[in-house]
Length: 237
Image 1: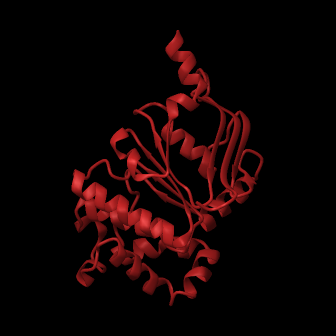
Image 2: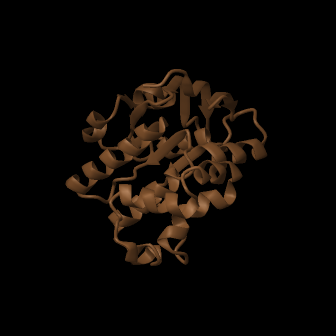
């Protein structure tokens, strides 16, 4: 595990307009190089928490420090730049662009971030790095790379989404239920490949899922219900 904080939340509070608090977290942290499993059932606020960390949402109170930047106090342009340059997100629904090829989908973050493109240049360029990541994640058929992502299986699309998140050496990888549609063998293979790539880069990994059986794959496991004071208060009513 690397030294120093990658993610540090303190006295965080978030609620949707006109609703009771959804998240109240006194303290939550993630170290550089750490692989953390965060468990929570559907509707527990997992995706909302990830939106706060990524800077897509802003809390009503508290501090959300990501790679040294307090997302709660940063300008929207600063949050956008941090997300583009230093975060890699594997979305639950993948969010792949259907009308471009597999290779173009993986390369896409380097079009929006000069910093990512510069880091990739040392590895031989964007296309070479995109190909390498796809091979590492088990997509080693060259004929697949020029095909639209809609022609791939669900499991293949998940690996394309992972390669897209990893390209350009982001410091923090956020994975939101990325294995929900995979069978057990494919799921375990996917997690092993993702962890190996993250370890190679010295990045931190925040892996979010409702399935407690996955916790053994990670350095540390936390239940969102134990962190979230709002959920505790609701359960006590």
